[in-house]
Image (cartoon, rainbow, N blue to C red; front, side, top):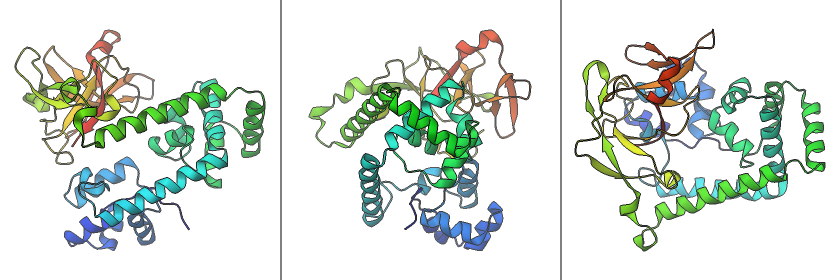
Length: 325
């Protein structure tokens, strides 16, 4: 049986809008069989393709994801069962050792997660789960990862064995286990209906932002702001604040009711979404990019526009750490 890697509601939204599989395949520039695998969850879309699907089907990204709010109970239960199956496999397959070794070797080569993911032809989230020991790896993926690390597949296996036998991976495995447990506890707490376990007032953060000129967001932290509860994965972050996604430079992909959660103390790296403060109160949503000379800039959309960062600009770049739709 093929592994389900991306449960989605593309088929439902496609049929609701009268779009055929062939139409969608043609617009994405991929084969009909690829669309079939994508809709069944056997093949993953990259971020650009996912955004394009949302545009074609005139829906939000949230509409394409499987979740307990907008998916049938049968689909949600099937996916939860699949997750449980994978976790059982992980316990006995040595994936924790593999993930820890990949992280060790990546750090040894001063490579970022996104660099290895891109060179291995994977999304960042998939590769991150592999390093966390929470996802199986196919032979092809294994070879791609080895290549991204500058190794042959057999050499990578030998390196992993050597590191494991030397006890070099124990600290990383312990760190990954702790991080995974904390994430699960937070997720369970967020879904707990009995609020006696959660001080919701303590988890509320201010939400700023009104629409400004040229697609900017005006953020006046001295003015009265509405509030939102932080997502479970941000419970431990104290400097987080919310920003209304009131700019239309992102088009119709994300609802203008969406809230971005921003952490000023976190460093925004290449590939991250961030708020760039042009002035104390005027900010733009950008994707942090790097040009061919290695200089960092922020990419804005609709229309595309680059904002190059000066050395003293980095305090003006606040990383977006979550988006609530």
